[in-house]
Image 1 (cartoon, rainbow, N blue to C red):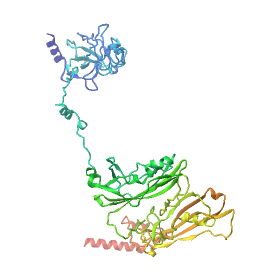
Image 2 (image 1 turned 180 degrees about the vertical axis):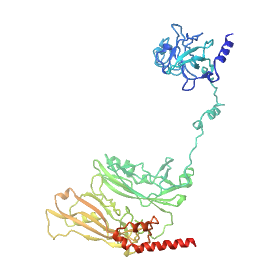
Image 3 (image 1 turned 45 degrees about the horizontal axis):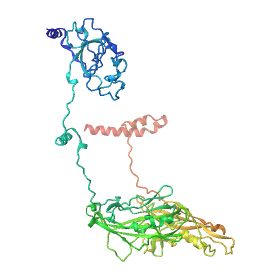
Length: 604
């Protein structure tokens, strides 16, 4: 009989605009028990003795809608009103109290909110409250728990605890087996559940810069063609540096040996055979057909294996040069390799400087005629390209001194780059001092072998055309012929002075060499100093002597400037001084006549 009366009472007391709504909006209130301490929402729970009754005092506070509830005890009742949860998700420490875990029975707290500042999610049952203005309720005979709440604005709200069984139920676990596993993974999962593994197929051909694949038949391993390069301040060899397709370049690096006697035969970097004991794949897709896609590495000249003879390690590789012929998208057609070898003296902390060169050229049938060397421009020089020199009918790059790891002069030399000023030096160690031939030997060390005689005017100069080359001017050291027994007058430095200029159209200028001069500097050196070595220096300087012509003058253009105002001439005439007014009568009459003629034309 109570339920019908409650419905009737609610219909009578609630206007249409004041029908109870769930407190999901920001204006909704959240009932909080008064004995739980300060409320986080700024409200205070009041007694229901003023016009309301609470037939059954069940604990609980909640946020708007379905939320976690912290139980409380109205008045002084000491019964355990804490809802029993089948699973306490925050009870992670057996036999100990977990902080803010309101369902942990190891805490032995009748009212956890008196000790904890909040309850962890999942440690209390969820509940739902519906609140209306308290002034609309005269008497409550609801079987559900009720509370009167005063919010921060002083408005009293009457709240009913709704029994929403959907807030506290457990998901039923789905049975997963081999039959429905893939279906569930596809329905609820993403792409990471897909178990198929896709292998990316290699590209059909090499692109510029791609690493070149090699195949070691002895171990059935696919690897990369390596071109060691120097790294760090000491230029140590980095073996993992790959050679790039169509990337012709030269690298230099240094190797240091703590025990050269044992490394002489065991170190593969010193053995020429380790640089051609493999085959090269024509195209990357050749891995699928190794039998038809392998290109052998041809040895241009025989190279002996390292040999330890006494205090010397013989036949050590000092230079490796690969010549690779390509045919567009058909890949690599031919590979050849050539070596330069040297001997190393067995000594502590010995070092070796190696040079690795990779050259690419288009595949063509070999002809008896020699191929021309690479250009440094077409026609004008390009900054950074080698400066071309000529001796007889042989064209090559002009070079500077280059030092080894210990500072002594190396057989390798730096190329002179057009437009780049550079300086280099090293110490020349003389095994046998012959005072009569010593200056000539040092001259040859400074300018290199052979001695440059001409320099290309343009970057595409042909050795067969003498007009495309200019003779190098030279200024040697001059001294009176004397018999020096305790000192020598020897060259110690070479400065290469290059004069160049731009010619041609200003929109596309071409750089050409106007003249080159070798300037040697000599000094007296004591005979005792020759035993420790002679410090030599080479440098190159480029001087731009371009004389830019004056810009051509074009025909004058007509630049009409009309007044912005039609009455501008009249304003100028009438704004002039008294003296100027006497001379301005004629212009005024002229303008009046013109204006009169215009008006007559309009009237006709």
